Length: 422
Image (cartoon, rainbow, N blue to C red; front, side):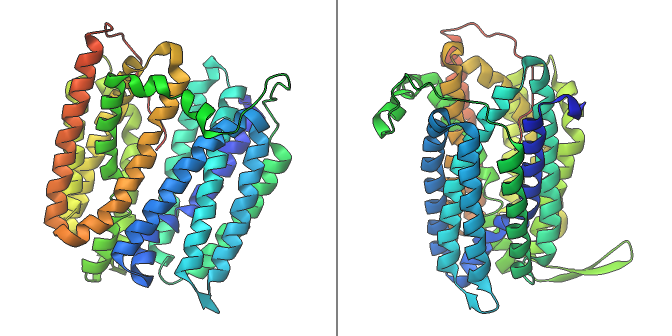
């Protein structure tokens, strides 16, 4: 059935999978990298700056994709990545180690991702139909999670000792994805030459004015930010804490002795989460169908928060494994129900603008994730655990108020439950 999809869709899934496999071996551990070479506070600031840059680039990336075309933006972004990865290799080679050059390359990578991702998403919609779209996103969801799982397994074991070799692999993979994008992807959008296109900030922001004035949607978005901010603590504060506090332990798994340190444990916990999501998505989706959405969503929020609260302070491998199981169950419960309710919240006449703005939840969540490194240095693991639970409380409160306000205006409608890629 994969062959029934447009060639652009197949190529994009392949290139995204290849990029994520190698990228997941390196980028989830950059908080540890900058903390080691600089310090935790500076690491948090640098990662926040990187997220902000990518956030701004994505605004222009989506706008330029409608002016210059999808493929042109994707190829431009892939070229930028190629040069950035080459510089990153040199900045972490046996001849030179420079966290500042590495940071500059990450800025370029962030800009390139801001150019590539919106154009790629628009391209997928251009070439898909209502009948094939669900299958397309389903395949993409599985590919994303599988690539992350493979990357984290390899990265957790080899990141500290073979970073240079992993970066070389990333550079080689970038050459392959650039070639596939430039030669195999077909352009799907041509801008009308009769319409004057403006490149400034003012026309860009006009499209979001209506969305910002929608109070229920904005409250729902803020609630989503509060919850999703916990997700991005995993590769920031929690990653740094485990690396600093976990004493390497010798474990025997299936008669194989291995040493587990903080980085390897983080990769195993993330793999555990990914495996649970991949194998139980369909089962949980079927179970919650036709059941009240709000109670399930709030229960998911609570379990998600409890799991991350335990990850914030515990150094027991058993407790951390159980905590990951708890938060994974919470994720399975809240992701589909929140997405279904989101379809109720948005104004159908401006769905594109609303869904684009909803994508900002991820970028702002990343900012809070980077900020967690700085805050965690001041309040410690137990303080962060309490903060995570407060975020859950705020998430539930804001989401509840948003739904109540929206229901006062528009009767609730039934929306099929679907999952989106992480």
